Image 1: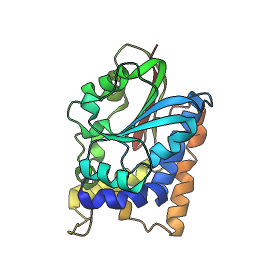
Image 2: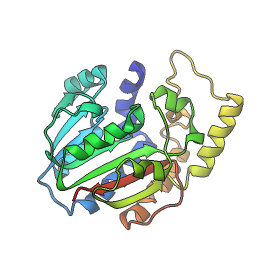
Image 3: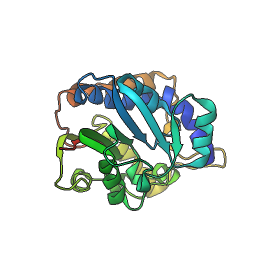
Image 4: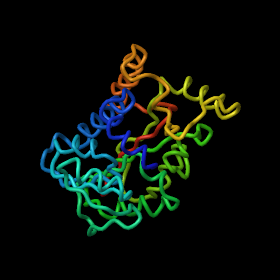
Length: 250
């Protein structure tokens, strides 16, 4: 993550229509799979600016991990959360340590994603749950992925194969389904003709395309968040801009 971007990201994660909808969908799903427990030992890997860790606190004690040292320092100063500096490729925790292990849009940031998922599984207790989200479809690759230092985007079978044959999947699906057609169109055209230009002051992410307080952003929020109806009922959407999976260690 670029230095300018993670500071912007603190506000985006809490205020932008995309993150508000995305985070609510993920947390609605977690609310279903953890049976309402509020005493879990939770690990949030790739905590970014810490908002998802704050959301997870309703389910228990959250340990956060952030790889980027500047972002880690920023969060330590900004928030009162339990956060460590470290890598998903070598989690600084014992085996079978957590009831719930989360990595929201993280494993695409590491070259060895198999090792990353193996580490998530290693620190997950027996009967514990791992929840992972990733960006979908390599053909949607854009400047947004480059700014975020992604190595890849995923098809569903590619993500599921990382978990192997151990444990069992509780749920897996694409999401950001309704907005897939316009996003796919925009990114395809932009990649072909390089419509979006960036400057030193511009991060180059997708989040500045639509003004945050506009009527369009409010509509997009409602449209995106409506997908929680399907995710909460474990209905599998056939395609989308992102993927979500929950896996149980048994």
